[in-house]
Amino acid sequence: MILSRGGFRQMLFAAAALFVAGVLLSPVIAAGPVSVGPIEISARPIREFQIGRAETKFGPLEFVGGLEMTSPSRDFGALSAFRFLKPGSDFIGVADTGFWFFGTVTHDAEKRPSGIQNFRMRQMVDASGQPAGEKAEVDAEGLSVKDGIATVGFERDHRVSQFNIDPDDMKAPFKQLDFLIPAWELRRNRSFETVARANPYGRHEGGLVVVSEKSLDKSGNNYAAIIEGPRKGVFTVKRNDDFDITDGAFLPNGDLLLLERSLTMAGGLKMRLRRIYGESIEKGAVADGPVLMEADMSYQIDNMEGLDIWTRDDGALMVSLISDDNHSILQRNLYLEFILHED
Image (cartoon, rainbow, N blue to C red):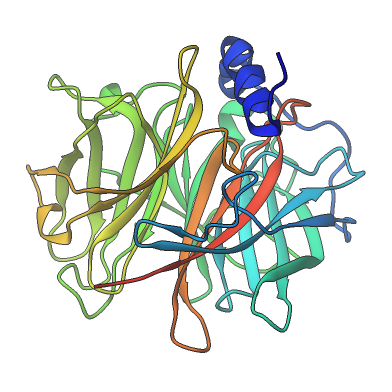
């Protein structure tokens, strides 16, 4: 039987799903000394989102372009979350192997992503300034940025910590936030994947929201909380179709855009984007909303874990995604860009 490239990849990932699931859950730490200097990144442009097709519209999302990133550095990879410090350009991120990463996305004359420049990584440190090497200490999964402060969600040792942003000297956290959700309700490797800051002029007045990956209440919904702002309190996000939440960011109108992932033997690896209505994000409520886009391995996806929303210089509302390769030969580090068309 002759398989298309997409079909072959779908079969490969379906057959390897249990192995990859083990990789996703395994306590892997990148080897080597602290990385403080530039890291060489090669970026291959991705022109088609659906493999072998030139279509660019996928529901309300329009594919702009992407990059497949590789590096000779053994520390590169495991990219869990990122936020732009300058819209569509300079960024900060966290890897779940205990590293900060920084860099710049470049674009060509047609506004498509063309490369990654000035990429560097710095290992997270403890209060004494020494590298934090235990997986439970450094399993960073969610990130929000405001006024020079990075707020990071960690799982295993569940916490939400704040750091001063200094790419040349990232120190230990200066503050731990009360995440409100009872600690015993958080699953070891399934907690704070999303840390998102609401629009300061919207319903939640700049409030800080955390959402778990798969820490479920008795009804099978994901624990979440508004941990800063005028409407503080615990709520849940409706879970359906065996998708886990891997990141999220607020849209200008106050809705929360969530990135979700599914990995099963039957269906292989999938991702989707779901819009959670802002008015459903309230203490004691079950937040929910429609799926905007879903993609399987016939598309240019991988273990999609990071998301940010920004406005392009021409006014387009942009959604950027990154993947976490878990330092696995079966996976890739991807960067993807879409325009979100609002009706």
